Length: 61
Image 1 (spheres, rainbow, N blue to C red):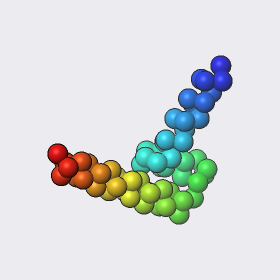
Image 2 (tube, rainbow, N blue to C red; image 1 turned 180 degrees about the vertical axis):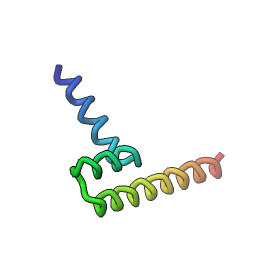
Image 3 (spheres, rainbow, N blue to C red; image 1 turned 135 degrees about the vertical axis):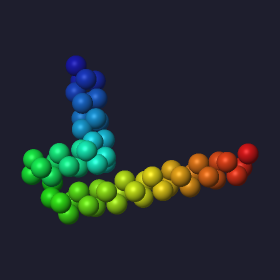
């Protein structure tokens, strides 16, 4: 049963990093709009980093 609970927590954590999850948390009052903005910046930076890694991988081939 511990694995199931851990999986649920992991899914909850992932939702903070996507737009829909942030909107739901702001609407429910669990996070502020400032916190949501911070997480949006984190998501964008993570996406840019992933794009750079993909670009570097393509150049190596």
